[in-house]
Length: 144
Length: 144
DNA sequence: TATTGTTATACTCTATAACTATA
DNA sequence: TATAGTTATAGAGTATAACAATA
Image (cartoon, rainbow over all chains, first blue to last red; front, side):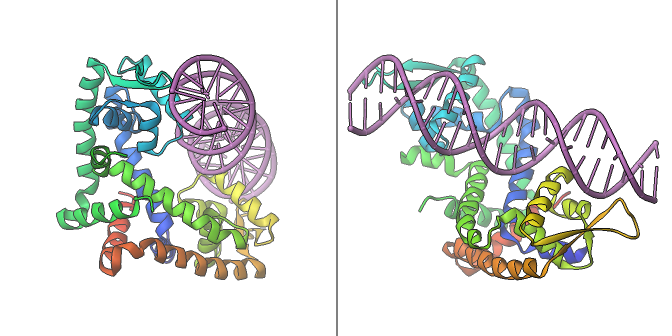
């Protein structure tokens, strides 16, 4: 690539954000592979384990994915034995989703692997710029 | 969303990066619409206008998209009359892609609109953090 | 009537394989 | 043999619409 063109692109926020995200996805995939899950599935395991029991819909809202997408993800996690559906006694329309023992074990391992990927990804920034970057992302990813 | 869950997610780099990118795409779409192009097409017009004449392949390399994807984008831009294909005299396998007068006009308008979107998107960060954010992205988006 | 989960469907983006013409 | 462009095709990822069960 010419330097001229690189400069043009370097100034484009959309290009930078898209490709930074793609690079992280590519770095994360091989780290997740040994655990048999991908980043999206790890995110679901994470929110399921975070606090009080939640339904598929609540998990979907938290991760900002469509509820039909959540059906697919939960299907996959249930097939792998990492997660269970259970009808809510309080509201029988809802599926409460819960980690299995295997799922908890998987989550713990995968979370460690993922943290390592994140740190390695951010390493070129140095500590201070990495902190600024995360802080900026937290502001920018927030719904208005 | 519970604060508990928000905290869990706030620490996840992948979640933040993905959703920040999605928010920018959503903000950019309506700004590009009056010009009849999307962000990906603007990127192609930008690299085509940047310096020396380039081929489809070179444009694809610079934008890190597949050459088959570039065919579709160039098709669309040519149909809209914003861009022209021309066989390279030096290497008749190559299509040199060039802006039309309409394409140049479109690029200028869309680039201004896009810059406005970018600035508005980054505004919540303040000047200093926004500069740090761009600097971090330039490091992270770089191929190793 | 509204909500939750589900299915079927479609659309976008992207990538792979195979073809052609050129080198 | 290798490269540039093209086409056909397929795979993610996501979203919309319609339905059943439940509130």
